[in-house]
Image 1 (spheres, rainbow, N blue to C red):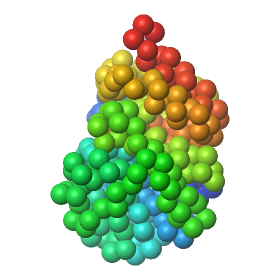
Image 2: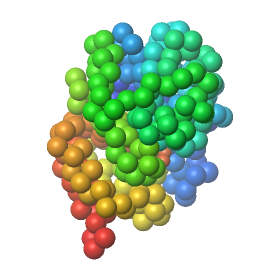
Image 3: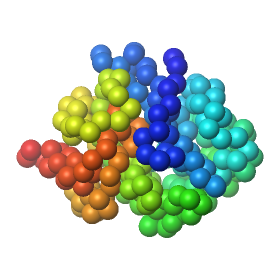
Image 4: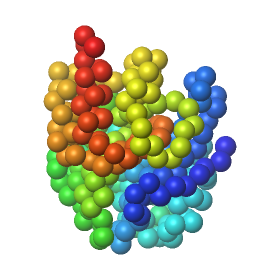
Amino acid sequence: MNTTTHEIAPDIFRFSTFVPEVTPQGFTFNQFLIRAEEPMLFHCGPRAMFPLVCEAAQRLIALDKLRWISFGHVEADECGSMNQWLAAAPRAQVAHGQIACDVSLNDLADRPPRALADEELIDLGGKRVRFLFTPHVPHGWEAGVFLEEHSGTLLCGDLFTHTGNGPALIEDDVVGPALAAERMFHAMSMAPNTNATLERLAALQPRTLALMHGSSFSGDGAKALKELAAGLAPNA
Ligand SMILES: [Fe+2]
Ligand SMILES: [Fe+2]
């Protein structure tokens, strides 16, 4: 395994590790570092990838500067290495929604996390991220995403997940590959609020979609989110 680094928006870096054994086309595991006065890591990666991702991060910032750690929901690829990061980065604190903290992170994290309300803002100094509580979207009661407001980057976790090892950033169709992967994985929770949640994210009009699995997307994020919602609809 090796980990590549690309800047997908100003001072927003994607670390990507391709694992050929997962799915016939292989699968990427991506983390994002927002470089700011208070840098933030979104997705920790699984424990086994920690040395690779940590090395990639250290090429951009000193670990003792890392201030915030977050992720979409509580799963091994999202936060398996959370406590390794907390040990390596003494100023870092996990930040996540109130439900994630109450249900899991107050117990799982080696230092107390910061619980965020829906729409709460963290000013990173030069960047600012707004937490959006998205229960069960894409999956997990505690699920949430962040919008980095300066660049219009939606850190959207498992939304738009697709297979293969494409470019770091694409401008063409991200929805088709995502719907094809969904037919294979059945990873989306189709809850009563799923469509409304995707519409709410579309209303933010993101210009970049930062994906945990697959290429990030630059373009009309609202259109992509609406097309994803339409493609996931039960009768689509
Ligand atoms: Fe997930
Ligand atoms: Fe994931």
